[in-house]
Length: 287
Image 1: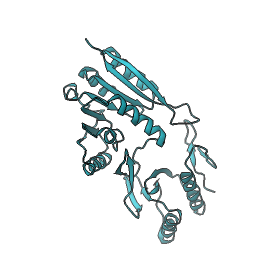
Image 2: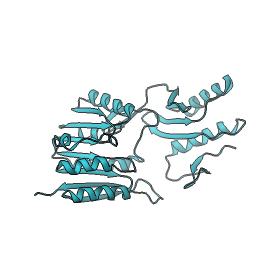
Image 3: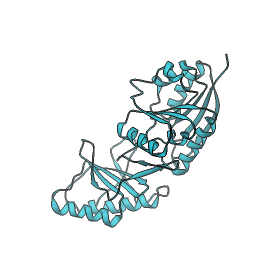
Image 4: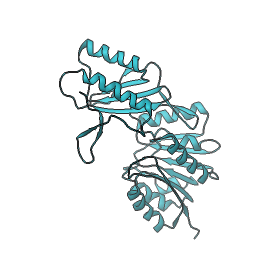
């Protein structure tokens, strides 16, 4: 019997998931389909499974697995057809490779279809994403030029791109290219910059070209980048965070540079867990 679920906290042990009341039914059905397929295989496997809902349906990425022989390959193709997967990608440690994709996979962000690379970062829920985007749009409404740092596929850049210039800075090349192409098709004034903001943050003098900044860094926060933001004096900074601890650490840097926390909105994207997403607005005090 195949066990498919989540890792136990601080462990490699997999807790089997037979039901989940916060997971979309389409993803739960995909889990059951994969469990039936792997349950018929001989031997032991340790396989990473990533599932996401895209415009075309369920997107599945399997890490550490490759079908052996013609029979397993045909069975896996039949599984994709029968389950109606939008895409199945396989990663043997060298990056995802396409196995099944009847039509190009997209994810719609603020009304703009964006090509979605396998394993791309997405917000956890539609309503959570809407709350975060709405906060950024409200707080930066009067800005004419905005820098979106750690922009990913363009969740905030595309939402803010109407009627203003936007710089989207991101280290993941596939996500950045997808954002650039989507913005071009939508006719937005968006410049996409391939940049590792941990090793090479935007400098204070570069940031002064903007009157608003939005950043949504990984859980570790963005200390090096926030130091440059603090030195820039840009009037409005929207900081989105999934880790209150690193957010608080970075917030101290902004406060010491003369910024005030004008508003803070917790967003409950992770139901039945201790995790919370934060949307915050820092405003530079007048000298």
